[in-house]
Amino acid sequence: MNEVEKRPIELRLPRNRLLIAATGSIGAAHLPQWISAIKTWYPEVDVRVVISHSAKKFVSADFLTLISVNPVLGPDWPESATTVPHQDAAQWADTIVVMPATLNCVSKLASGIADSLLLSIVQSAECPVVIAPSLPGQATRNPIVQENIKRLKDSGFFVLGTVTKPAASTGMDSPGAMTSLPTILSEVARVNLKGSAPTPTAERN
Image 1 (spheres, rainbow, N blue to C red):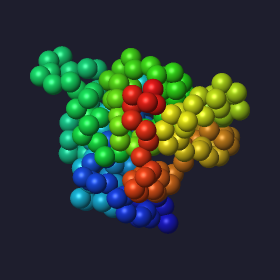
Image 2 (cartoon, rainbow, N blue to C red; image 1 turned 180 degrees about the vertical axis):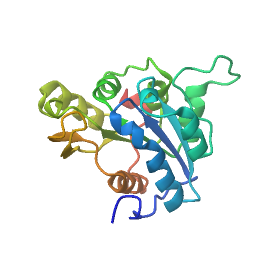
Image 3 (cartoon, rainbow, N blue to C red; image 1 turned 90 degrees about the vertical axis):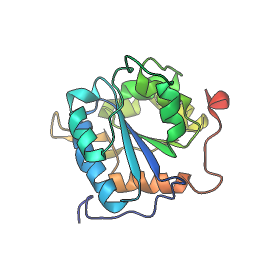
């Protein structure tokens, strides 16, 4: 049974609002499949997507809009906005899932950097934020990367471990691959249990 066929547990989203933040790992090419699976498993859930500039190299924003039935946010800031886009998106979401989260994304989030719409949304969030890293295999052993992941966890983010899968670039097993979609959604369900939310943004960043 593959990922699309296996339905995880209920998500427990208070308002059925899930925001997916996608950065530029090659795994971003699977976003349409992931969103389609989520919409199939949870038709009551409203899914929105924000993408980085690097993610746009792997997936079409127009296609994501079609699949999610919502306009895609990013990668650029809206040219004309009557509201504050990053705050609106952060407040809209019940949970934000950063998938895939690249090494660059993990490093910037751990340092409190918000130099893009996507990072500004995640850094502004007071809802649970689940991060699913997709890293170069050798980076998983880097003490700086390990410290950044620890810092994220200590700051209230929910960071999932990576898994070993064949790397797209070499075909050889790599320990930095993003975990499965059912595992990510199971974590979404877990963090939405009472008492599992991270600390407010002002305290964690």
